[in-house]
Length: 336
Image 1: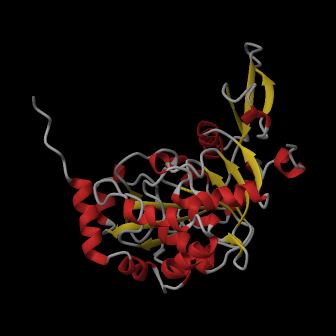
Image 2: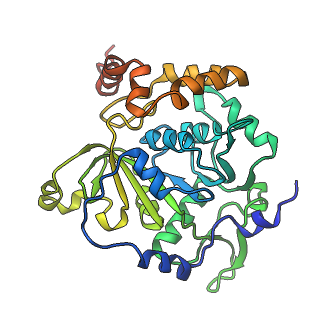
């Protein structure tokens, strides 16, 4: 397998100066940034953009925004596959005959694997078709690339990936440490055009907070040229004024805020609702057959007006309450 010139060069520009020119244009005014999901996707996400998604696995994923990207037929996106499970499934769902090509290039670390659920067959179909440009990384290496961008440096050195096939099919560079002479891997800063992050709470200006693991969301929010936040609940700004440490992402990083209760479904939201394994199971069964999968997508994504209609199709408030109960239930401590 040979790398193309694009994959050798990388899918994004690591230049800090280029990124700063973009950041200079971002308003620092504390303005009302409320959007509907439709408005946010239409205004801030365009064909050819490079996309990164917050959360981790099925934890705190911005499902509502990803559904809308498919409905609006955004094309030829780049993507950072940083333990991307249902989010990668969704974007690959836009790559099929008659539907165009949602994804065009992917920095892959962990995709397609749904852990105990097995491998997801449609993403595998897409990857094996050769329709995607691919560069390989590890989860750690991608996180360091976000960190470099957040720090405002064009690369950071790491020790992993050297001497591996993953390293050979990335666009890292081998360097000698100027202090010790040790061989290191230099990984380029990753400045996504658009980052999507789902959180528990935000105010209308974009200050936001979450509970549970943060993984790389802090770094992503600082690396993003454009940042769209979806939240379970909009809260009064005074809650952040009274406790400034509550704002894990400050308003000046954020371009749009969308209030979307259950916006991570069928993923989980720590302390609020658990993953809907029933729906994920239906998805993975349907995608084995392309015609069945197209019908499944028409029912749940392309055939609905918005995310609330999708939730209703999936069982509505009664099903969501079951998932809330499953998330907050603490089993009794085992005794002999």
